[in-house]
Image (cartoon, rainbow, N blue to C red; front, side):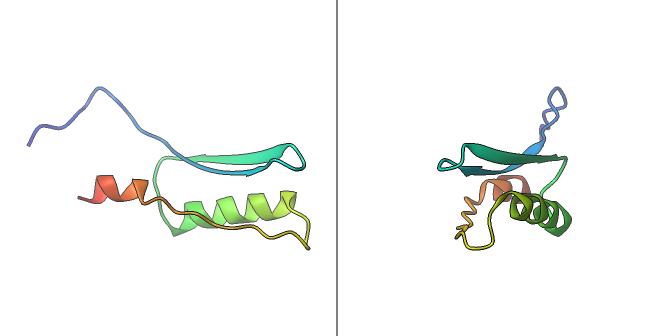
Length: 66
């Protein structure tokens, strides 16, 4: 199997609040529970306690698992 050794990939976890004009980004070398936990901790610091924060997982990380 041929492997692309020319590129390194990082993964982005991001949250955006259009109403307040703020956002957060966590850049990690991999997708795992620890990375998701860091993202949720960071985004929870930026969102008010009464706000709703939907979580959308697009499955993009699944491409590397195949």
